[in-house]
Image (cartoon, rainbow, N blue to C red; front, side, top):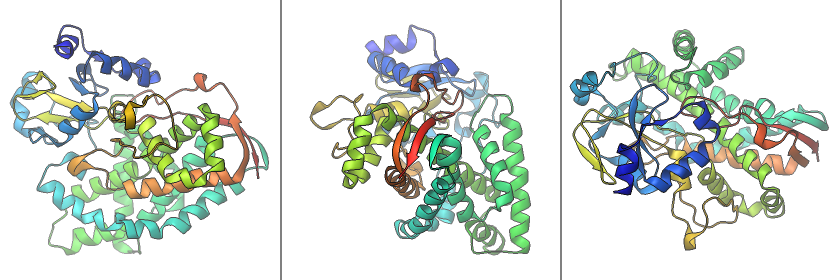
Length: 409
Protein backbone atom coordinates (compact mmCIF):
# COMPACT_ATOMS: atom_id res chain seq x y z
CA UNK A 1 0.00 0.00 0.00
CA UNK A 2 2.96 2.28 0.66
CA UNK A 3 3.99 2.04 -3.00
CA UNK A 4 0.43 2.52 -4.25
CA UNK A 5 0.10 5.73 -2.23
CA UNK A 6 3.50 6.97 -3.42
CA UNK A 7 2.62 6.29 -7.04
CA UNK A 8 -0.98 7.47 -7.15
CA UNK A 9 -1.46 10.15 -4.48
CA UNK A 10 1.37 12.37 -5.72
CA UNK A 11 2.12 13.85 -9.13
CA UNK A 12 4.26 11.98 -11.64
CA UNK A 13 8.03 11.89 -11.23
CA UNK A 14 9.52 14.58 -13.49
CA UNK A 15 12.49 12.98 -15.28
CA UNK A 16 14.16 16.18 -16.41
CA UNK A 17 17.79 17.34 -16.49
CA UNK A 18 17.74 18.07 -12.75
CA UNK A 19 16.60 14.51 -12.06
CA UNK A 20 19.32 13.06 -14.29
CA UNK A 21 22.01 15.22 -12.71
CA UNK A 22 21.31 13.54 -9.38
CA UNK A 23 19.87 10.28 -10.67
CA UNK A 24 21.29 7.78 -8.20
CA UNK A 25 20.00 9.77 -5.20
CA UNK A 26 16.63 10.28 -6.92
CA UNK A 27 16.27 6.58 -7.63
CA UNK A 28 17.21 5.70 -4.05
CA UNK A 29 14.47 8.02 -2.84
CA UNK A 30 11.95 6.42 -5.19
CA UNK A 31 12.90 2.90 -4.13
CA UNK A 32 12.27 3.86 -0.51
CA UNK A 33 8.70 4.77 -1.51
CA UNK A 34 8.17 1.72 -3.70
CA UNK A 35 9.30 -0.09 -6.85
CA UNK A 36 6.79 1.39 -9.35
CA UNK A 37 5.85 5.05 -9.91
CA UNK A 38 3.99 7.29 -12.29
CA UNK A 39 6.46 9.43 -14.24
CA UNK A 40 6.69 12.03 -16.97
CA UNK A 41 9.16 10.18 -19.17
CA UNK A 42 11.96 11.86 -21.16
CA UNK A 43 9.93 11.37 -24.35
CA UNK A 44 7.29 13.70 -22.89
CA UNK A 45 4.80 10.87 -22.39
CA UNK A 46 3.33 10.10 -18.97
CA UNK A 47 3.78 6.47 -18.03
CA UNK A 48 5.03 4.11 -15.36
CA UNK A 49 8.62 3.89 -14.12
CA UNK A 50 9.91 0.64 -12.60
CA UNK A 51 12.84 1.13 -10.20
CA UNK A 52 13.00 -2.11 -8.17
CA UNK A 53 15.14 -5.10 -9.15
CA UNK A 54 12.58 -7.91 -8.89
CA UNK A 55 9.85 -5.77 -10.44
CA UNK A 56 12.20 -4.83 -13.28
CA UNK A 57 12.85 -8.50 -14.04
CA UNK A 58 9.11 -9.09 -14.06
CA UNK A 59 8.40 -6.12 -16.33
CA UNK A 60 11.17 -7.05 -18.77
CA UNK A 61 9.62 -10.49 -19.31
CA UNK A 62 5.93 -9.76 -18.78
CA UNK A 63 3.89 -11.26 -21.66
CA UNK A 64 1.48 -8.30 -21.67
CA UNK A 65 4.18 -5.62 -21.91
CA UNK A 66 4.98 -5.36 -25.60
CA UNK A 67 7.24 -3.24 -27.77
CA UNK A 68 4.54 -2.96 -30.42
CA UNK A 69 1.94 -0.36 -29.37
CA UNK A 70 -0.73 -1.72 -31.74
CA UNK A 71 -2.59 -3.95 -29.21
CA UNK A 72 -2.96 -0.91 -26.96
CA UNK A 73 -3.55 1.59 -29.77
CA UNK A 74 -7.08 2.61 -28.83
CA UNK A 75 -6.23 3.30 -25.20
CA UNK A 76 -2.97 5.03 -26.15
CA UNK A 77 -4.73 7.32 -28.61
CA UNK A 78 -7.39 8.18 -26.05
CA UNK A 79 -4.62 9.11 -23.61
CA UNK A 80 -3.07 11.48 -26.16
CA UNK A 81 -0.16 9.27 -27.22
CA UNK A 82 0.70 9.80 -30.90
CA UNK A 83 1.45 6.43 -32.45
CA UNK A 84 4.57 6.27 -34.66
CA UNK A 85 5.51 9.80 -33.65
CA UNK A 86 8.98 10.80 -34.87
CA UNK A 87 11.74 10.53 -32.32
CA UNK A 88 10.16 8.09 -29.88
CA UNK A 89 12.12 5.19 -31.33
CA UNK A 90 14.68 4.30 -33.96
CA UNK A 91 12.27 2.07 -35.90
CA UNK A 92 12.65 -1.06 -38.02
CA UNK A 93 14.89 -2.99 -35.61
CA UNK A 94 14.77 -5.74 -33.02
CA UNK A 95 14.78 -3.51 -29.94
CA UNK A 96 11.30 -2.30 -30.84
CA UNK A 97 9.88 -5.61 -32.09
CA UNK A 98 8.09 -8.56 -30.47
CA UNK A 99 8.30 -12.21 -31.50
CA UNK A 100 8.25 -13.56 -34.13
CA UNK A 101 9.67 -10.42 -35.81
CA UNK A 102 12.15 -9.91 -32.97
CA UNK A 103 13.40 -13.50 -33.30
CA UNK A 104 13.89 -13.15 -37.06
CA UNK A 105 15.73 -9.81 -36.79
CA UNK A 106 17.94 -10.92 -33.90
CA UNK A 107 18.96 -14.06 -35.77
CA UNK A 108 20.31 -11.90 -38.61
CA UNK A 109 23.09 -10.45 -36.43
CA UNK A 110 23.50 -12.84 -33.50
CA UNK A 111 26.30 -14.83 -35.20
CA UNK A 112 28.52 -11.74 -35.20
CA UNK A 113 28.41 -11.49 -31.38
CA UNK A 114 29.06 -15.05 -30.23
CA UNK A 115 31.60 -15.43 -27.40
CA UNK A 116 34.08 -17.03 -29.80
CA UNK A 117 33.89 -14.22 -32.37
CA UNK A 118 33.98 -11.62 -29.64
CA UNK A 119 37.09 -13.14 -28.06
CA UNK A 120 38.81 -13.01 -31.45
CA UNK A 121 38.48 -9.22 -31.37
CA UNK A 122 40.59 -8.90 -28.20
CA UNK A 123 43.97 -8.27 -29.89
CA UNK A 124 42.50 -5.49 -32.02
CA UNK A 125 40.74 -3.89 -29.03
CA UNK A 126 44.02 -3.98 -27.07
CA UNK A 127 45.90 -2.38 -29.97
CA UNK A 128 43.36 0.45 -30.28
CA UNK A 129 43.44 1.09 -26.51
CA UNK A 130 47.24 1.34 -26.46
CA UNK A 131 47.33 3.53 -29.57
CA UNK A 132 44.95 6.01 -27.93
CA UNK A 133 47.23 6.35 -24.90
CA UNK A 134 50.33 6.45 -27.12
CA UNK A 135 48.79 9.54 -28.76
CA UNK A 136 48.83 11.43 -25.45
CA UNK A 137 51.82 13.41 -24.14
CA UNK A 138 53.73 11.59 -21.34
CA UNK A 139 52.00 13.74 -18.73
CA UNK A 140 49.48 16.51 -18.44
CA UNK A 141 45.71 16.81 -18.52
CA UNK A 142 43.15 15.19 -20.81
CA UNK A 143 39.43 14.63 -21.06
CA UNK A 144 39.19 10.85 -20.90
CA UNK A 145 35.84 10.89 -22.71
CA UNK A 146 37.31 12.60 -25.78
CA UNK A 147 40.70 10.94 -25.73
CA UNK A 148 39.87 7.39 -24.64
CA UNK A 149 36.40 6.19 -23.62
CA UNK A 150 34.64 7.49 -26.75
CA UNK A 151 37.13 6.71 -29.56
CA UNK A 152 37.79 3.15 -28.34
CA UNK A 153 34.28 1.70 -28.79
CA UNK A 154 33.58 3.97 -31.79
CA UNK A 155 36.59 2.50 -33.58
CA UNK A 156 35.70 -1.08 -32.63
CA UNK A 157 32.08 -0.94 -33.83
CA UNK A 158 33.01 1.08 -36.92
CA UNK A 159 35.56 -1.53 -37.97
CA UNK A 160 33.15 -4.36 -37.22
CA UNK A 161 30.41 -2.79 -39.34
CA UNK A 162 32.69 -1.40 -42.03
CA UNK A 163 32.10 2.33 -41.47
CA UNK A 164 34.73 4.47 -43.24
CA UNK A 165 37.06 6.57 -41.11
CA UNK A 166 35.76 9.79 -42.67
CA UNK A 167 32.23 9.11 -41.36
CA UNK A 168 33.02 8.12 -37.78
CA UNK A 169 33.00 11.59 -36.21
CA UNK A 170 29.53 12.21 -37.64
CA UNK A 171 28.30 8.85 -36.37
CA UNK A 172 29.55 9.64 -32.89
CA UNK A 173 27.93 13.07 -32.75
CA UNK A 174 24.61 12.03 -34.28
CA UNK A 175 24.24 8.77 -32.37
CA UNK A 176 24.73 10.55 -29.06
CA UNK A 177 22.00 13.04 -29.96
CA UNK A 178 19.74 10.29 -31.33
CA UNK A 179 19.39 8.87 -27.83
CA UNK A 180 18.33 12.20 -26.31
CA UNK A 181 14.64 11.69 -27.04
CA UNK A 182 12.52 14.80 -26.65
CA UNK A 183 15.38 17.32 -27.00
CA UNK A 184 16.10 19.88 -29.72
CA UNK A 185 18.01 18.29 -32.57
CA UNK A 186 17.04 14.72 -31.72
CA UNK A 187 14.86 14.09 -34.77
CA UNK A 188 17.41 15.77 -37.06
CA UNK A 189 20.14 13.48 -35.69
CA UNK A 190 18.04 10.36 -36.33
CA UNK A 191 17.29 11.55 -39.86
CA UNK A 192 20.98 12.28 -40.50
CA UNK A 193 21.94 8.80 -39.34
CA UNK A 194 19.34 7.30 -41.67
CA UNK A 195 20.70 9.26 -44.64
CA UNK A 196 24.28 8.29 -43.88
CA UNK A 197 23.42 4.61 -43.42
CA UNK A 198 21.43 4.51 -46.64
CA UNK A 199 24.46 5.92 -48.47
CA UNK A 200 26.77 3.36 -46.85
CA UNK A 201 24.34 0.54 -47.67
CA UNK A 202 24.37 1.66 -51.32
CA UNK A 203 28.19 1.65 -51.22
CA UNK A 204 28.23 -1.89 -49.77
CA UNK A 205 25.88 -3.07 -52.52
CA UNK A 206 28.30 -1.80 -55.14
CA UNK A 207 31.45 -2.94 -53.36
CA UNK A 208 30.78 -5.51 -50.59
CA UNK A 209 33.53 -6.09 -48.04
CA UNK A 210 34.25 -8.47 -45.17
CA UNK A 211 32.17 -6.60 -42.60
CA UNK A 212 28.84 -6.88 -40.81
CA UNK A 213 27.08 -4.18 -42.83
CA UNK A 214 27.94 -5.97 -46.09
CA UNK A 215 26.62 -9.21 -44.58
CA UNK A 216 23.34 -7.50 -43.64
CA UNK A 217 23.01 -6.11 -47.17
CA UNK A 218 23.57 -9.60 -48.59
CA UNK A 219 20.89 -11.00 -46.26
CA UNK A 220 18.49 -8.33 -47.47
CA UNK A 221 19.24 -8.87 -51.17
CA UNK A 222 19.78 -12.63 -51.39
CA UNK A 223 17.41 -14.22 -48.88
CA UNK A 224 14.05 -13.71 -50.51
CA UNK A 225 13.19 -10.47 -48.74
CA UNK A 226 13.49 -11.86 -45.22
CA UNK A 227 14.97 -8.52 -44.21
CA UNK A 228 13.11 -5.49 -45.53
CA UNK A 229 14.95 -2.31 -46.55
CA UNK A 230 13.51 -0.50 -43.52
CA UNK A 231 14.64 -3.34 -41.24
CA UNK A 232 18.09 -3.31 -42.83
CA UNK A 233 18.54 0.41 -42.11
CA UNK A 234 16.98 0.10 -38.64
CA UNK A 235 19.19 -2.85 -37.69
CA UNK A 236 22.31 -1.05 -38.89
CA UNK A 237 21.25 2.04 -36.96
CA UNK A 238 20.72 0.04 -33.78
CA UNK A 239 24.15 -1.60 -34.09
CA UNK A 240 25.85 1.75 -34.67
CA UNK A 241 24.15 3.52 -31.76
CA UNK A 242 23.86 0.72 -29.20
CA UNK A 243 27.15 -0.83 -30.31
CA UNK A 244 29.24 2.03 -29.02
CA UNK A 245 27.17 4.62 -27.13
CA UNK A 246 26.47 2.23 -24.26
CA UNK A 247 30.14 1.28 -23.95
CA UNK A 248 31.33 4.90 -24.11
CA UNK A 249 29.26 5.59 -21.02
CA UNK A 250 29.98 2.29 -19.27
CA UNK A 251 33.67 3.19 -19.46
CA UNK A 252 33.02 6.77 -18.38
CA UNK A 253 30.90 5.67 -15.42
CA UNK A 254 33.39 2.99 -14.41
CA UNK A 255 36.37 5.33 -14.47
CA UNK A 256 34.37 8.00 -12.65
CA UNK A 257 33.50 5.49 -9.93
CA UNK A 258 37.14 4.42 -9.54
CA UNK A 259 38.35 8.02 -9.40
CA UNK A 260 35.78 8.66 -6.65
CA UNK A 261 37.11 5.61 -4.80
CA UNK A 262 40.92 5.78 -5.11
CA UNK A 263 41.31 2.87 -2.70
CA UNK A 264 39.41 0.64 -5.14
CA UNK A 265 41.52 1.93 -8.03
CA UNK A 266 44.65 1.13 -6.05
CA UNK A 267 43.35 -2.36 -5.24
CA UNK A 268 42.82 -3.10 -8.93
CA UNK A 269 46.38 -1.97 -9.66
CA UNK A 270 47.65 -4.37 -7.00
CA UNK A 271 45.24 -7.19 -7.90
CA UNK A 272 44.60 -7.23 -11.67
CA UNK A 273 43.16 -10.74 -11.25
CA UNK A 274 40.10 -9.02 -9.77
CA UNK A 275 39.33 -7.26 -13.05
CA UNK A 276 36.65 -9.62 -14.49
CA UNK A 277 34.62 -9.44 -11.28
CA UNK A 278 35.33 -5.71 -10.95
CA UNK A 279 33.73 -5.14 -14.35
CA UNK A 280 30.50 -6.72 -13.08
CA UNK A 281 30.64 -4.63 -9.90
CA UNK A 282 31.08 -1.43 -11.92
CA UNK A 283 28.15 -2.45 -14.14
CA UNK A 284 26.03 -2.94 -11.02
CA UNK A 285 27.20 0.23 -9.35
CA UNK A 286 26.48 2.74 -12.14
CA UNK A 287 25.47 1.40 -15.52
CA UNK A 288 25.01 3.38 -18.72
CA UNK A 289 21.52 2.54 -20.02
CA UNK A 290 19.47 4.47 -17.52
CA UNK A 291 16.09 3.71 -19.10
CA UNK A 292 14.75 1.05 -21.43
CA UNK A 293 12.72 1.96 -24.47
CA UNK A 294 8.94 2.04 -24.10
CA UNK A 295 6.85 -1.03 -23.41
CA UNK A 296 3.08 -0.91 -23.89
CA UNK A 297 0.48 -2.65 -21.75
CA UNK A 298 -1.64 -4.78 -24.09
CA UNK A 299 -4.00 -5.53 -21.20
CA UNK A 300 -4.67 -4.45 -17.63
CA UNK A 301 -1.97 -5.80 -15.31
CA UNK A 302 -0.51 -5.33 -11.82
CA UNK A 303 3.14 -4.69 -10.89
CA UNK A 304 4.06 -4.68 -7.20
CA UNK A 305 0.43 -4.10 -6.30
CA UNK A 306 0.14 -1.10 -8.64
CA UNK A 307 -2.60 -1.37 -11.30
CA UNK A 308 -1.22 -0.65 -14.79
CA UNK A 309 -4.15 0.03 -17.13
CA UNK A 310 -4.23 -1.29 -20.67
CA UNK A 311 -2.57 1.19 -23.03
CA UNK A 312 -0.08 2.45 -20.45
CA UNK A 313 3.57 3.11 -21.28
CA UNK A 314 6.03 1.30 -18.98
CA UNK A 315 9.76 2.04 -18.74
CA UNK A 316 12.35 0.25 -16.58
CA UNK A 317 15.31 2.05 -15.00
CA UNK A 318 18.23 -0.35 -15.40
CA UNK A 319 20.39 2.03 -13.36
CA UNK A 320 18.02 1.83 -10.38
CA UNK A 321 17.23 -1.88 -10.73
CA UNK A 322 20.93 -2.78 -10.89
CA UNK A 323 21.68 -0.77 -7.74
CA UNK A 324 18.72 -2.58 -6.11
CA UNK A 325 19.98 -6.07 -7.01
CA UNK A 326 20.44 -8.33 -3.95
CA UNK A 327 24.00 -8.54 -2.61
CA UNK A 328 25.66 -11.33 -0.59
CA UNK A 329 25.07 -11.02 3.15
CA UNK A 330 22.89 -7.94 2.70
CA UNK A 331 25.87 -5.71 1.90
CA UNK A 332 25.37 -1.97 1.33
CA UNK A 333 24.59 -1.42 -2.39
CA UNK A 334 25.93 2.16 -2.25
CA UNK A 335 29.44 0.83 -1.51
CA UNK A 336 31.76 0.09 -4.44
CA UNK A 337 33.68 -3.15 -3.84
CA UNK A 338 35.72 -4.43 -6.80
CA UNK A 339 36.44 -7.65 -4.88
CA UNK A 340 32.74 -8.41 -4.38
CA UNK A 341 31.86 -11.97 -5.48
CA UNK A 342 28.82 -13.13 -7.46
CA UNK A 343 27.54 -9.71 -8.50
CA UNK A 344 24.04 -9.49 -9.99
CA UNK A 345 22.71 -6.61 -12.11
CA UNK A 346 20.44 -5.75 -15.04
CA UNK A 347 22.86 -3.55 -16.95
CA UNK A 348 22.29 -5.48 -20.17
CA UNK A 349 18.58 -6.01 -19.61
CA UNK A 350 16.78 -9.31 -19.13
CA UNK A 351 14.74 -11.70 -21.23
CA UNK A 352 14.54 -11.77 -25.02
CA UNK A 353 15.84 -8.20 -25.32
CA UNK A 354 18.99 -8.91 -23.29
CA UNK A 355 21.78 -6.97 -25.00
CA UNK A 356 23.20 -8.92 -27.91
CA UNK A 357 26.51 -7.06 -27.64
CA UNK A 358 27.05 -7.75 -23.91
CA UNK A 359 30.08 -10.02 -24.52
CA UNK A 360 31.72 -7.34 -26.67
CA UNK A 361 30.97 -4.61 -24.11
CA UNK A 362 32.47 -6.70 -21.30
CA UNK A 363 35.56 -7.40 -23.42
CA UNK A 364 36.06 -3.72 -24.24
CA UNK A 365 35.60 -2.59 -20.64
CA UNK A 366 37.97 -5.22 -19.27
CA UNK A 367 40.68 -4.40 -21.82
CA UNK A 368 40.18 -0.65 -21.46
CA UNK A 369 40.47 -0.74 -17.66
CA UNK A 370 43.50 -3.02 -17.79
CA UNK A 371 45.17 -0.65 -20.26
CA UNK A 372 44.43 2.36 -18.06
CA UNK A 373 45.86 0.58 -15.01
CA UNK A 374 48.98 -0.52 -16.90
CA UNK A 375 49.69 2.68 -18.82
CA UNK A 376 48.90 5.43 -16.30
CA UNK A 377 51.33 5.60 -13.38
CA UNK A 378 49.24 8.45 -11.97
CA UNK A 379 45.59 9.23 -12.64
CA UNK A 380 43.51 11.71 -10.68
CA UNK A 381 40.64 14.12 -11.28
CA UNK A 382 41.61 17.50 -12.71
CA UNK A 383 38.43 19.11 -11.37
CA UNK A 384 36.09 18.28 -8.48
CA UNK A 385 34.08 15.27 -9.66
CA UNK A 386 30.94 16.72 -8.08
CA UNK A 387 31.10 19.58 -10.59
CA UNK A 388 30.96 17.38 -13.68
CA UNK A 389 27.89 17.46 -15.90
CA UNK A 390 25.96 14.27 -16.64
CA UNK A 391 24.15 13.60 -19.92
CA UNK A 392 21.11 15.87 -19.44
CA UNK A 393 18.42 14.00 -21.39
CA UNK A 394 17.42 10.69 -22.91
CA UNK A 395 17.98 7.07 -21.96
CA UNK A 396 21.75 7.11 -21.38
CA UNK A 397 23.69 7.89 -18.19
CA UNK A 398 27.27 9.08 -18.23
CA UNK A 399 29.55 12.07 -17.66
CA UNK A 400 29.78 14.54 -20.54
CA UNK A 401 33.45 15.19 -19.73
CA UNK A 402 36.00 13.50 -17.46
CA UNK A 403 39.06 15.78 -17.08
CA UNK A 404 42.05 14.09 -15.42
CA UNK A 405 45.69 14.75 -14.61
CA UNK A 406 47.95 11.85 -15.52
CA UNK A 407 51.44 10.48 -16.00
CA UNK A 408 52.05 7.52 -18.27
CA UNK A 409 54.15 4.63 -17.08
